[in-house]
Length: 112
Length: 114
Image 1 (cartoon, one colour):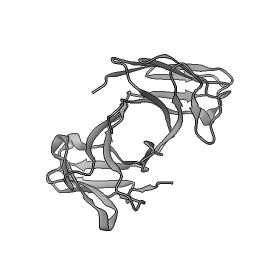
Image 2 (cartoon, helix red, strand yellow):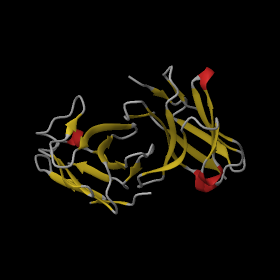
Image 3 (tube, chains in turn brown, cyan):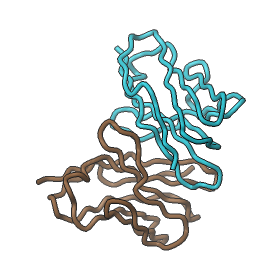
Image 4 (cartoon, helix red, strand yellow):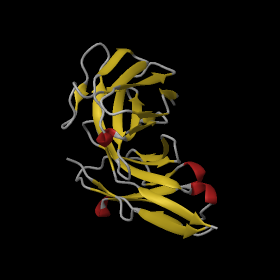
């Protein structure tokens, strides 16, 4: 079975600083990869997805993620954090059987 | 992208009672799923709601506890039966369409059992 590891359950950054949220997956076959964001009291919203096209994927709200097969990683970055970025972020993998596997989530705090 | 309406958005229920959560999609979708998100944890798939047939449950989840209906391609319900405090969670409806790689989620139902 797939597993998704998000390093750091809580990340704090200053407003304007780089955001880096880490995600590693277990698979020898490049799967579909996703980042979802969950704002308080809301459902999950898709930030971006990798589907075996370009390894650098750009998403909404200035986020991007780079797929690195050799490292089985799909880290999420944003050059400059905004207060509105404070939320829970989930990395997810979809395997060839079309089932999603979610990481445990990273809570991002942005310090003014 | 599909727009999903899930209700209720939250509820506080007495132990031993049951709650039915509704999920309405603004378009016909192939796949509908129900997830549970326990406090501080990630999403766990409960079951796949199959249109016109019994839901497919994941390991650890049974129909008697979580009966699911899906009468058509735009609507599903999840019932949490005989609730206990351990059932306090966020329950999320999710949909995928044929040929699409991504999933869309409802806003969730925050359930507290007292």
